[in-house]
Amino acid sequence: MILFPLMSSRDSRPDARIRILRAATELLAAGGRSAVTTRAVSAAAGVQPPTIYRHFGDMQGLLDVAAHETLAVHVREQATRALTNDPADDLRRGWDLHIAFGLAHPDAFALLYSAPSVGTSIPVIHEGVAVLQGLVARIAEAGRLRVDVAHATDLIHAAGTGVTLTLAATPPEERDPRLSETMREAILTAITVPAAAEAPHEGPDAAPAAERVAVHAIALLALLTEASGVLSPAERRLLSDWLHRLATARSPGTRMRRSPPVPRGTHSASRSRS
Image 1 (cartoon, helix red, strand yellow):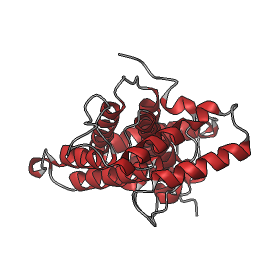
Image 2: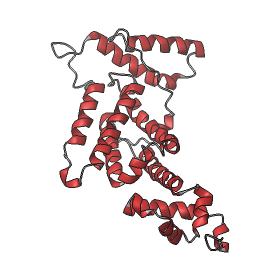
Image 3: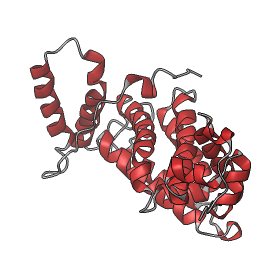
Image 4: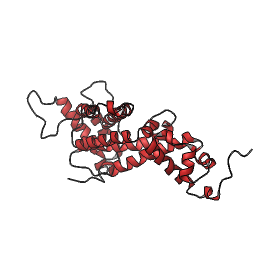
């Protein structure tokens, strides 16, 4: 029995997969997950249904890749946006843009973090986290980060994901407009110190000495990649160990998770001074 009509010659064109993915991505953005049906995708892409399954296995596979591509476009935009002289404000803006993306594409966002899709999503999620890590590293380089870059990045990513999923699951008319900003500022307060011009250096409001040492150790750790030719690999490892100890001296017994080096282009190549 022939279940489907024979594929037309245009189904074998090399761009069939691209047309299918583009159609699914547009349908997902416009109408949500329920709009991405075999019939709708076939009509929009100009292919026969078997072509979809040949390229993506099944509709869940197509949905996973469409959600992946939706986030990939957002990550590329985030990676190339111009930055300012205030790394904390740049992080605020990055947070707001990410929340806005999740609310504009709730079905794609949910797919990215759901169990069936997570394997497909991991690479692009990691790309997004790398962009976030670059923003956090700039705060560290400015001497304003209380905790190590990796821990701060994990906190922000977890909080932002939770806020997005919570807001997306709430009817728009019932959403608390303060939720995202309150969470954002709570995280920033927990992980950053005031700019040098604003921070008191003495008196009851001055930061404890151990915290001041830790902040500078974290800043130097973030900047070590700038001096790659000055120290030998062994010297860099030794200095890194010392700085990690200083960065965690405030909290005995706390292990500081080492951040992978941030590619310099992630947070400085596209920097624009304003």
